[in-house]
Picture (tube, rainbow, N blue to C red):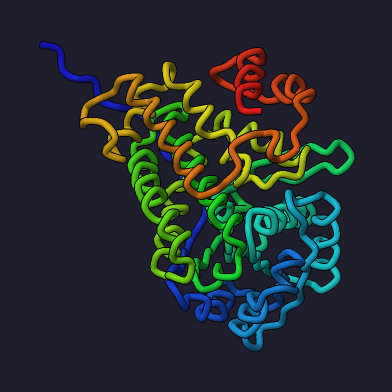
Length: 368
């Protein structure tokens, strides 16, 4: 009798050192800055967060006497010109550390600034990320910056720009608009789902992704009905962390690629693009990634344990669609002003491992 073949794979760790989580964890910010040896901090954030909430004031209070200055001009999808302005301020103020506050755009902006500094001075700037959404950009080495002339988001990846520290304080998420908060939770769900059918073997990521999916299905509706419940918000932050854990090992797929293409070109938040694309992509993949998607249906107790049928995979897609509908989030491209006449161009410019351009266009037509 032949012995069972042993699974073989590999795992890469990102250079992320310290995650502080729980309500009130922002109080540790000054100690974390000191631990990283930083003397002069640049806070990178967006205008709304800086002018319409007290979040930045709380960050400044937590910094205490640490020297800091603020760049509050990062817009949605991280325009290249905003990154250039933040970089200029960093050099002018002789900054030696970064704190990003907000969603994926300011966090990606801080990574892009860090990359420019690395290229120029061959030195990595310590970066502390303080997220106020569930996009999980703080756990990634991926960066998206929008080319404003071409109106397309161009990305890069470099492990050394991964934030070294992350502070998950649910109290700082309270001012985040509910639609943004919930839709970024669907973005986290998108991370978790695409983890399961990413190429290669990644058992650690798969286990965490399934737990993230369970948490997101449980706590997103609960947060919608009880928006001030900090324990629920903390569970969602942990779910987002699980959804994008060591993502260097699990390349993103078609839903994310479509989101990147649609988001920057039509000024649609990435959380909203995931609301529109994730469930339809899952349906299109039900005969390709049947086993991976059926695991989701089992985790959500939609089918019996051990049911790896295409029907189970489709039930997982239907559950995602129903969750988005229950949360009152958009599900059609026309709802976010994507012209039907542009679908062919979007399809031909969006890479997919599984579908050809004609099949991607057919999928886009179905969700228009």
